[in-house]
Length: 249
Image (cartoon, rainbow, N blue to C red; front, side):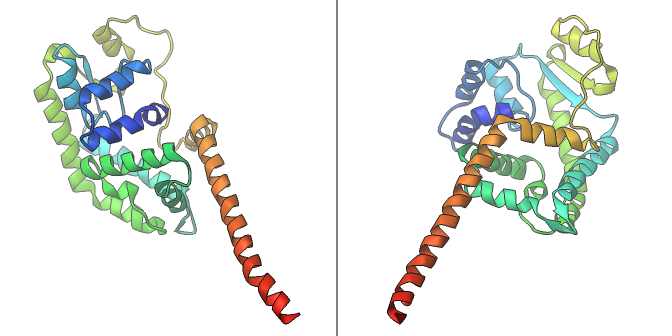
């Protein structure tokens, strides 16, 4: 999320046709990044690859099979939707609304716009659905199974058909460090591969969101707007009350 927040402005400009993919690459490089993973870059991998050149190394992460991938996908998004609910009421939708209105600051508004646009076009709009019902969202995610499986298989096939075999690593996490390190010409670390944000790991998401400086700033924006709304309500109430009081006197 932190990387995406750093260049969310540039990605939105790219999606609007205002800048080129080379400008996106420059934005990554100017911030000290020499690789990309996760959205939106993973959905625009082909443009990045074509701009960077045929010698660019690409790692395609896969699961054992499509069924295993879908099982992980639906469990994760069901977990995240249910975590933001209480008694079937999706209070997480509150954050979607205030982010889309810009009440959590410009960074969070851009990230919400970017997530919505990219996931709606390339993935599953259900995960960004605005609904106060947990069941409505979970049912929509589960109903996307045929289409999402098709997209997963098509994505993997296109990557393997596009990238020369010498510059492509098809990697399953369970294969460990060796394939990745050999592919990148790096030594193998003497510690296990980090595994975070797994389905069932509720603590990771909370630590990541609330310890991240961007989220602290976002809640600061929200608090400021809430205070302004309270002050406005009080001012309107006083503007109505005081004339009526003096009139009655």
